[in-house]
Length: 540
Image (cartoon, rainbow, N blue to C red; front, top):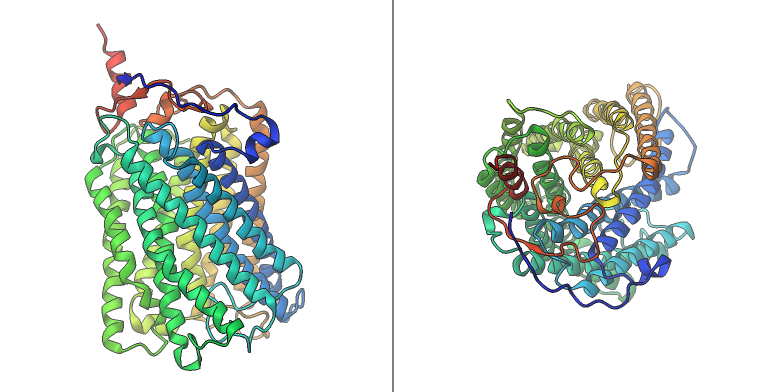
């Protein structure tokens, strides 16, 4: 792998200590701050989830009252989606890795990048500030009208929640612009489109989806704020369905905004630990773009019981089934990469296998729910809760932990304890399935979602108790991960390339210097580091 000597960028004198983090415009530090912020919100949302499971562990439980319960699941869903998954994958991994992977020294707009982080953190604090100060926001994370209008939710908590989401949308939009410009203008010499790493393709598609979808949600949020405070009638009783269309036009693509970066992570890790190139690279790239495109054609499947025209329902049933095709292409290509490979069963690969096992279950249940009769039967039941968590926790969260175990050695220069990592994986896989698989059965038995308690004698007791036990096992697995993070300080030195990776971030020091690369690398293939090692090993 050749390199080009380009003068290092002029920087102001680097600040140290806390001020060095607060005032930084270094994409790596900003990425780390995104990760720490998102994981902190993940722990809070997990605690809220445990209270929810305790409330439902047995009939007629009174751990919290109904209004408090509504606030808990509203904040749990909001935080897991908007303050953990998207900031961790897009803001955290995207900021830290994308410039390194494409051979750049920073993002295109470093100060805009810092502003995007601080506005995201501020939005999270605004939302939690209202929650902790007792301002009720209990219309669920979907904020359906009329439940979110002034009549049903008269307190200021709903307004605080809406304003927090508006700020989050601003932050994610600015970040998406930065990623696209960086990827388009700052790639290393020789990095053609087909040589961009799969994580780069995933981030590019995600950024386009954010730019197309987020303004629609932001407009809907502003309209709802106006309805609540200025007596406008955008979402009056006769127009309640308009909110659903605008909300789901963003929120179903948001599922792919949360899953595509995780798919990019898996596409980077599996070839390294299988010691094979990614099977069907171009097919995986095309499938990524197709998922991004088709993601905007499926939102009405959330509204099959909302009185939508039957002809329109059939169209969206078809598109929802069709989007499973590019997803299936990815799954089979990952399996083909693993097949016959020299598998190195370290924690990152195990987390990818957990991703595959659980995400496929969520995908299959999603195809089932694309059928209008099935969706009408299970709509708003615990079947939907199970499906949603198999897609997002089984997909995004397993992908996040795979990425953390794979790239934290690069970020810190220290290796995780692999035995603890494998214990974390095993407990998380078991705990996740014990928690959410029984919810399929509960949904078929007719248990509705978003209920604060239930009476005995309906056959729901055993499934809820099992799910609650699984939730605490899942929480214990996260404690194992935290212990592993605490042990990093005394961990084994990682070296520059502990996994013998394929992409450019492994060609620089661990942790990378502020300028990333002293000399900009020249890319000559899809796997520049693998080829460089091969040439070195075959020197005469």
